[in-house]
Amino acid sequence: MKITIVYYSKTGKTKEMAEEVAKGIQEVKGVDVRFFDVENIDMEYLAESRAVIFGTPTYYANLCWQLKKFFDESGGINLSGKLGAAFATANVPQGGADVALLTLIQHMMVKGMLVYSGGTTLGQPFLHLGAAGWRDTFEENRHLFRVFGQRIAAKAQEIFS
Image: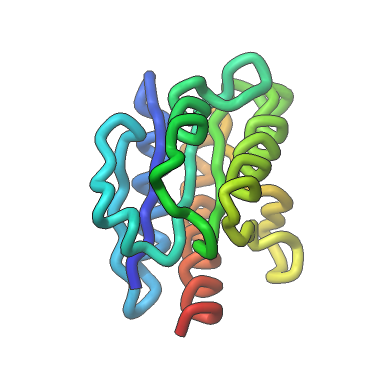
């Protein structure tokens, strides 16, 4: 089963988080994952993926315009029925990552995706809307990003196997 991670990263932190999420996904047997900058997506791989995870930096309590443009102009891309998840980076916990995640979730739902976060049902760490990373705690929370990836991959296998 294939999983795609689509992200935008200006400073490198969101890309770094995408790499950690991918490491978690790779720990789940039978799953192949690739990650792409939103401006360089392998569309064939995306089309074949059962799950797509979107990652954004947070700007003014919202997602980046590059991902917004992707959703706005992706009329020819069928995401319907795919499992979707989101992660965000921000400078501080109060930086609006929650709003960025909710906005991504809305876009995924409009595209007909099945949205999954891992929530609280799987125990700690709680990932209510998706994973979020902050500048000052990024290093100590790398394992949480991997757990997020593991949970999405496991759910995709549960749904699509």
